[in-house]
Image (cartoon, rainbow over all chains, first blue to last red; front, side, top):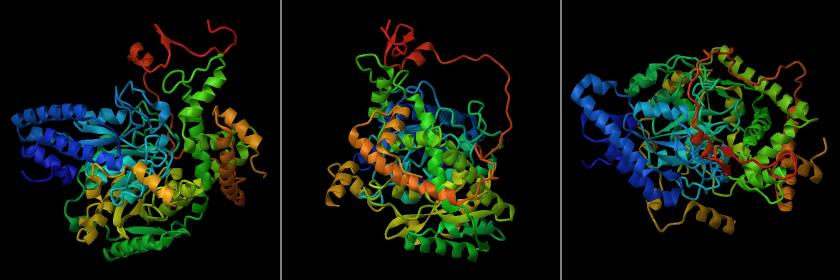
Length: 530
Length: 100
């Protein structure tokens, strides 16, 4: 068979597995080959686990063979992800494997158990291709804060993939895997999905158990899927969502099986839009936004209107306070979560002569954490320190209430979902924002209010701007993931014939060059020429 | 509010247990003050009567039955310890004097 297996969607792979036209091993080998060949140029993977992936694939094939003997019903009963390669952000624990969270302080650490979502994926029969690169402790919007080097965006290798889940997004965009998982604390799934031209969803806070995930900001962190289309993303969320007693914030809310049955037909998908009320929040069209990105969003809105949706301008008046609120709450929680890296129980350890344990902590953490993590731990420690708690942390939590109320009032007024840009710009060049922390923070201006309110949001491709992908963000009330996927699927149906839909990332051929520059070399060259 | 002085930065770094060079502290002083300026925007809002939000999706306490289940094995727990002796993790001395 001449089909390039890596170009298929996960559900197309699943169909070929069931019909016996391919095997999980063939899928794993095809994807491993591309991932290994291109990792020099992309650095999307911190580990490519060839041996483990092939072992899992063989096991999946054995189950398939036995199901085939048992008849069609047994084949249908297999999970849609059975035998499908998946990438995992390197802050997800897989027993016996590394889990660096992109940090030097966890170099050499081996996870002693599986994360809940890993257990779920194993039960589904998914195949783990490896662990993807990320900003250190998920703090960043460009993947340039990884201790293991930056990641290139397959659309333009001199630009960033976004962050913090930059490796997960780039790996899906470059056909290394059809599916991957990331985490989103202020936009870390949606923003890289937008910049790499793939689908990414941040579910409602509490939708997916975080047991076995390295914590960043515990009142904000959520796990979610990346995929190359909406139906694949919904199937991956379905596989990992649901209550788990080991994460006390995971909610006992049913996960709808309809996530696996979004409409296949474009017309049926589009018909869902008729009579829906969509809100266009004026505050999300921020000053400094790329005008061409804004044009793509407005063009997308006209498509939605033409399909029968009622789109009205709405206001979320406290949006402008989101950035300051987020950059108090998230660092405060991070400073507490990262206190565990003490060099005593696991991870990097520096023991100095003389036996002063404080000096050991200072040395371990000073050496183990990178610049952005230090900045945030400093901010958080300061915001929580005596005398400043009321002025900063308590104030931010009160403003968080106002941000959440803005959303509550909009949805209570009958708006089904909000439509907004995911990112104020397309992928930017290496080094463009690393000299000013606030400029980097602004990359998440359109995504972080959603985390502050605990709501679900999805980013879907909506076209290109000067050859780089633009993401459209849909935001819904709590637990409305199924509705957001239906809306996203409708948009996919509306734009099924668009020219940009058929385009592959523009620099995949360059990424094949084993003699080309690495992302770190590209970043250094750009810094030198600036 | 006045910005962070150099000695404030050193104090917070010590509270956070982050050992840093003089150059790092210099750079952080400028960066942190730049970020703190952004925080000032929140002072525009009157939040006197607004309750704080610590948790967005409010859950009632969920209780489970108290059933014993196996924990991680000792080997798994000790496996990542940077320094160990037999069944023990070697920790730095915290009470002064000899490590024994």
